[in-house]
Image (cartoon, rainbow, N blue to C red; front, side, top):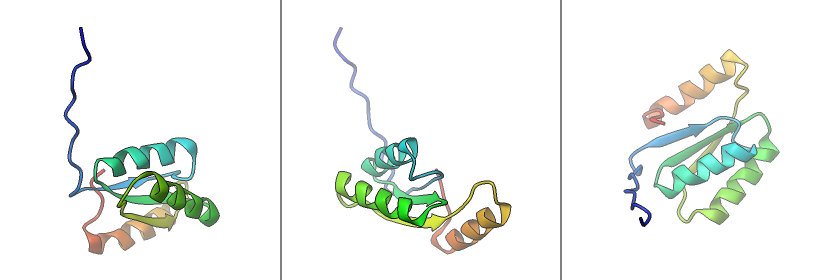
Length: 94
């Protein structure tokens, strides 16, 4: 049997937030979602690592929409600040 074709979802109207985005899995997940059209929000504790992640994402995915936020997922106030900052744009769907 041949490989079955899988429909790719259209995520152009969705925003995805990736925590630990500068790590290996974070950037891979971001790239996969960006390829499907999602706007990407990268979060991590390192500004330098986030900058590198954005550069990599932009080199791998044409026309990617990406924003970054410094955020420590173990810090409730940092999470709340990021959530507040994202509200005007409609929040996050993924």
